Image 1 (cartoon, helix red, strand yellow):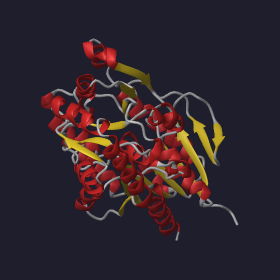
Image 2 (cartoon, rainbow, N blue to C red):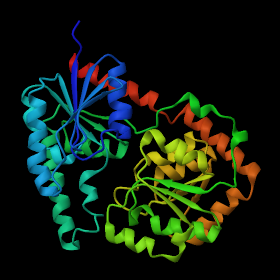
Image 3 (cartoon, rainbow, N blue to C red):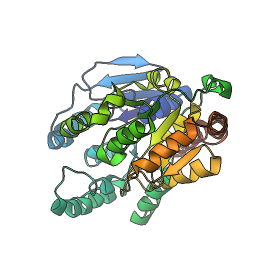
Length: 372
């Protein structure tokens, strides 16, 4: 029997992106689908864990050119592959992807609230943000109504698409893949290790506050990720507290546990209040929990606040108050027994509730429905 052919597309994300490749593509491949992933990074073609990765060549550096040229190139390639289902992950592809709908089922994977991002981009002038928000909303609404389905990372995003009307929208949360290697005993937990943060390095993600708070707490900060703004990177490096930071740069998903989590005692999630943060599900908090790290979490993100308090796996703080954050870090690492209990609670919650297996079933269920 011929396998159902599936093509995922991204011209923005890395080829081994945690949600796209490590979770969705691999899960679909293991479920018996013929899975390909189109990327635009210039690293060439390969087959990995049953997924055929097809490289368009490096995407255009200009956002406008990427949205026009690279998007068209990606969709042209996808059309020639004659798939049964196309699943794309970038708002940049919203218009071009409509061409795919003439041949097969098409899914848009909404990782974030795309229009809301326009309200928090520092490089967009204030006067233009409202205009871009409305324009992006119109594009998203117009396109989504013409697609087969929308996969949403949170219920809040699903609610937004429901308000657009006549759209099949399902929630597939970005929970981490549970691994048997996470079953280490809590006795291995060590409060003398550094504090860590892994993820995008921007002002709204609280990088400056992390650097200051860790210095005040007298603990080293392991910082892993990429700065999306060189000027901001230079500003952070010029801080006197930067001497207390071990900057690792981008660390591949497959190496994060070894290079960061195993070397850490606490994980930080200090997202500021912003339209796209309030109802988000920061994957890093769940990865910290799976690795047995107590968290110091932002009160401005509802999911972080609720999970941290309900599972007793860390402390919730005002992300702008570096004294409060430093105090929370000291309260954890200064009390080894309490820290070990938080570590155990975090692992238990991760194994019981917050892992990819439950979300994988929802994704595969959607595919089966579309094929039927």
